[in-house]
Amino acid sequence: MHPVQHIIYISSVLVHFVLTSHPTILLVHLYSRYMGPAFSHVGFEKLLVKNDAIVDAANFHHRLHHRFFECNYGTVDAPWERRFGSTHDGSDADTARVREQRRRMYRGHPPV
View 1: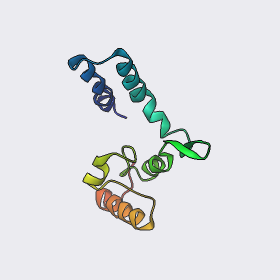
View 2: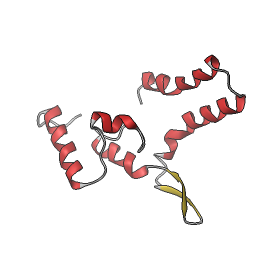
View 3: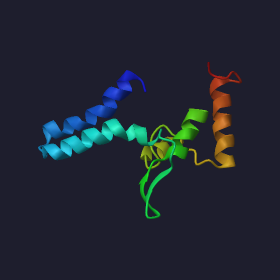
View 4: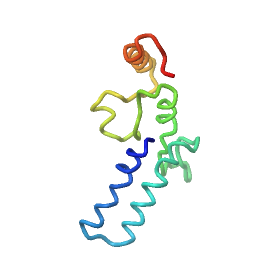
């Protein structure tokens, strides 16, 4: 992430200084901001407890971002992905769409 993206991403906790909330809520919010990106980079798709998915790490979703870059910037449940057409579900159709998008963006020249 770019440093400006980090500032925007982490600045969401400032809401707790405007709207009063319990310090524990602030700490949980900070924890989720700092540790949240780790869930999409751990190499596991889900955290299972007794065969129940407790946490969806979205590893596959984010791996597609590292492979194609022009898709899946956020998490699986990020509404902006669908809104801006940058979601990739792993299907052949989405792979073709993203590759065509890359071809148009770079006009046949891959990014450096």
